[in-house]
Image 1 (tube, rainbow, N blue to C red):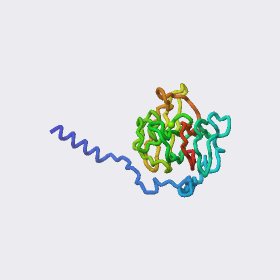
Image 2 (image 1 turned 135 degrees about the horizontal axis):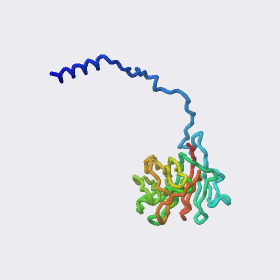
Image 3 (image 1 turned 180 degrees about the vertical axis):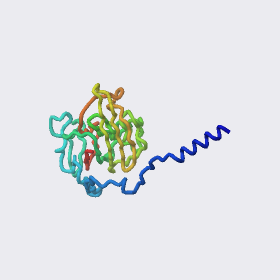
Image 4 (image 1 turned 90 degrees about the vertical axis):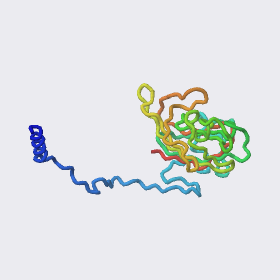
Length: 248
Ligand code: MG
């Protein structure tokens, strides 16, 4: 009987005491209008033009945005008919400008008739911030170790699929890169992340990069600031066109 009375008293208190109700939400309370976004005119795939706010790294004319391997002179690769071709043995080429976070667009092709197997056929690569290689390889009916395939983060993360077009056709890379942030002791506070899309197909989905992409040995962690884009001379005359980048 006593217990029942105590419960009654508790219910009475709950009914009597009033607390504030949450304010009524209206649709406008979660709709933000400023600052309005900058207008960017998209590029045209048919005419190989870049978005209006992109930095054009190659528009078909010359290699004025690039230097040779060590930055001491002009980029030595061949430009003809709106296309760059790797000059085997001349070394990699490197952008004059350095970048942090970006969206990179680059088209590449393995010329018809290129022979070889595994890593020996159609090898090149795109080095992000001069340190992290997204592999380029002729993987059309050409098997190799999977963390060395086209679209791999070289010797780290294989691509999700093989989206290669055959020799003589153009492959399109769209690469979205978030730069690392380092602690004072030189280790990662945040590792770099990359998304790689080839020919409209996702190969890397916000993949964490462990460190530099080494041919021999484990990834290294080397503190750095902004870095250039490097295209690799791996002894094969890979072709490039329509290269642009949008810092973010
Ligand atoms: Mg390579």
